[in-house]
Image 1 (cartoon, rainbow, N blue to C red):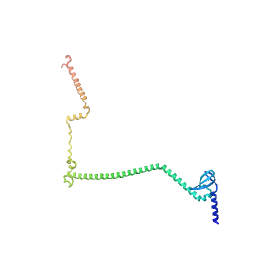
Image 2 (image 1 turned 30 degrees about the vertical axis):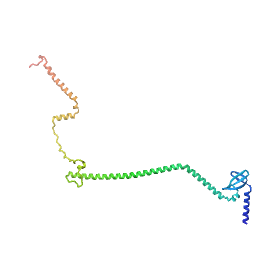
Image 3 (image 1 turned 45 degrees about the vertical axis):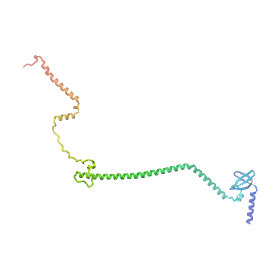
Image 4 (image 1 turned 120 degrees about the horizontal axis):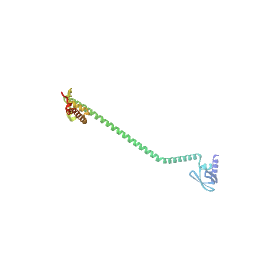
Length: 248
């Protein structure tokens, strides 16, 4: 029963494929279409106005079944095309963004290299500073020990004690003999009554007015005037007439 029915259906399909038919596609309607051959996922046909290439999706269901085309295959092909289009778009986008991305990567690489160099320099300075501080501490410790030893040797020399076994004389260290501290002199009592010369000198030295020569010139001129005035009455008295002379 099934075999005759399948044969009948195939006969109808082949008959339809061999006879003229009309097919409508997005590009228009083709009349008196006759399929000539399969080209990929389409068929090459002749129609009333010439030839055309019609996709499997636009064929009548009978022709789609004849060529093994189904809705599943159409959906799969559509998904594949969309994926390919997406891949192409992503590739184009990546190509457009490649210079920017390369510049960002170069900047990040340069920054990383600068950070690495800065970290190495910082670590190097830290090691150098630690070594320098250690050397300073060691030198300070040595100097303190030498100073303490020198003070001890100096004290022993001042006290007349023998030097230490491995001590260097202080004179060789400082380049000269160790100065002895002299006894302070006894204070002298000042005289209660200084001489006249010393008093006058102290008065003159302490008084800046008396150090001015014009002051002394004025004093001398004043003394001369006083002497002249004192001598004037005596001179006038000698010139009076005899009648004005008092008689005893």
